[in-house]
Amino acid sequence: MRNVREVKFNVITDNRGKMIPVEYPKQLEFPLKRIYYIYDVGEGIRRGFHSHNDLEQVLIAVNGTVKILVKTPYEEEIVELNDPSKGLYIGPMVWREMFDFSENSVLLVLASHEYDESDYIRDYNIYEHKAKTYFRRRK
Ligand code: T46
Image (cartoon, rainbow, N blue to C red; front, top):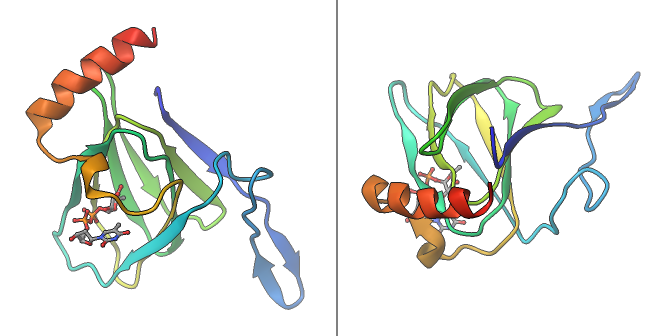
């Protein structure tokens, strides 16, 4: 799917446990400006419901499982994150919804920019209109 892909991280394992380094540009395709994590999400809760104009992010379920719906006017996919060594890259102009957070799940997000509310598109009709233009230009 355009502007969405799985990212695989290398796990360093020894007799003390496992460790995953994430470093730009080795494992991350954008310089990191911000991280945040989402946890303690109750049953039946759905978050997201927006797209970003420019922001690039990698979502990683560092504990538990979380489902992510990624959608453009042309494609739609549900990805289950359940492995700390796998991330989901979401680029600009992709609608996302996060749901089915398991108990004790922690969703870590690596972001290319500082928080900026003006980069969000929270109205689906506005998103659809902008995304059609965006993806048509990039055919
Ligand atoms: C995204 C998905 C995966 C901040 O003040 N700073 C921040 O860095 C973030 C991410 C949010 N906020 C504020 C903005 C809202 O008042 O925290 C509140 C909750 O944010 P929001 O409703 O946008 O949260 P989600 O879980 O719907 O979406 C978040 C990210 O905002 C978004 O960029 O792609 O996670």
